[in-house]
Length: 261
Image 1 (cartoon, rainbow, N blue to C red):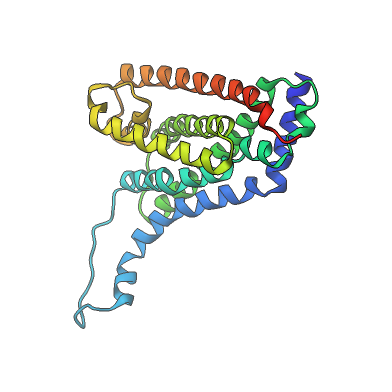
Image 2 (cartoon, one colour):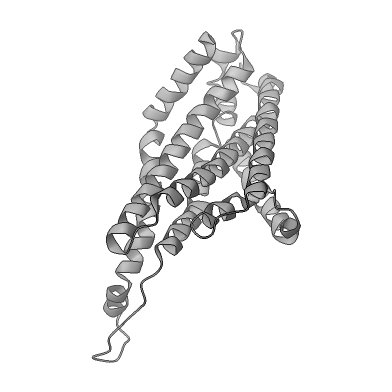
């Protein structure tokens, strides 16, 4: 436990030193406010770009607040996840490749503590960023349009948080198993792409797929997901998370010999 605390403090300081604790939330906040602001000022934007007959009046129906929050989640699914992959792809592979892990590996080291300290800090930063982005989007949606019921918003954000933690775990598993940060990023993105393709082809027959978590999150803003289906999805997601973490710990120990000493 003492070693885990020391490694956790090390990771926290590194995230402070390289400003991940600041710039990642800022990116998500910007993504969160983009949708409500762009929709609110869309008539002015179209008018400023020109190309409309003189005297024409642009009247667009106000989007539903639920649609805006789902659009914010869509930004996180594309740009946000790419940011997380790029931010943490070198967490283990980068240390192993540039030799900074040498000071750790020459001492008796609990690889479970080593991996979990990185996982916990990366998950905290990711969740802080996602919630900051969602809250920023929620605030501007409420001010400029109307508010989503706050209870529904909490269920929506909490369900999506499970998906984000699963993605972070996949990134760290890839970083532990690959010899370089670039390959770790490639493995993560390829895995997400291939699994998403498989899910789009066959996922309609499996209501418990972890890839349904974003859809289930969005459904909380409407009629809500099926309780049995989302419960089993949480269970399957937890199993996947544990398996990825266990494999990440094993790879971190197995690839110790590849560290520069």
